[in-house]
Image (tube, rainbow, N blue to C red):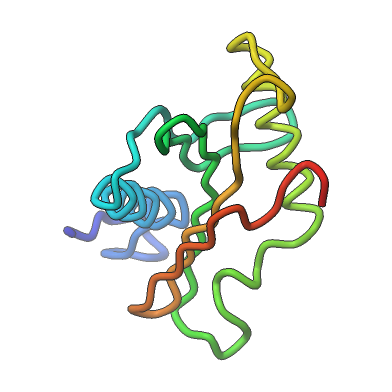
Length: 131
């Protein structure tokens, strides 16, 4: 992937947003190779953002994508706090409502795709609205 200049302070480096978008794109491709179908990316709802929304057979899958260069301060998956989980649940609830659904009427789950260095970890059903 080509590096895009991010300004005078960091010539030749990607911004945090560009880096996040690149890892989300990588996660999307990885999940599609696993058989999931893409629905949406970077869905912003009041109070939160959902990185990817995918379809896995009959289940709607809300995906949080995380990246860490190394596991020195903990891996990427460990960076998802309870507060972040609440924000994702809230955003998903709003998205479902806008699409005439709810946690009671739509089979859904919350997955994490965590990239730590060159390792990828897919945590299916990492948390839910009953956690």
